[in-house]
Length: 136
Image 1: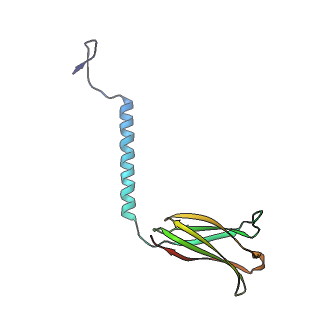
Image 2: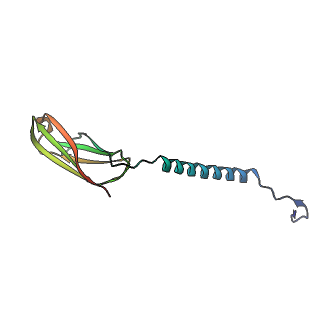
Image 3: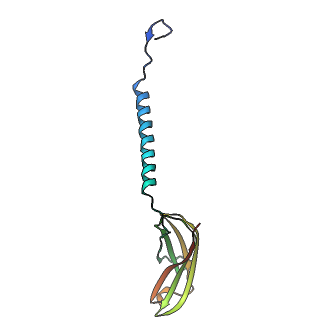
């Protein structure tokens, strides 16, 4: 046993705050390790799964602008992605625009804008597709 400055003896006890901090830290550590073990055990590798969403978003100086959203729902990153947006009238292509995205990580999205010279209302259809990408 230890003695304090008044000569009284006491046991080396932890107070409630020390036990609370210890328990919280231990709980967080166990939770993080469990999560990482679960993610490692359930990971499935696979190619990037890219798809494109787009809609008109005219601006003051760009009346024929489209907002393009590239989503990657796959388990791998895609690099140097090229997206093509085409204005079609019947089977004839009126105009094409391309958007290049340097990097699209797994389970993420990237945004960009393309502008056309022609009014998209002159087209029957607006079509978007991912033309190419690289695997890092």
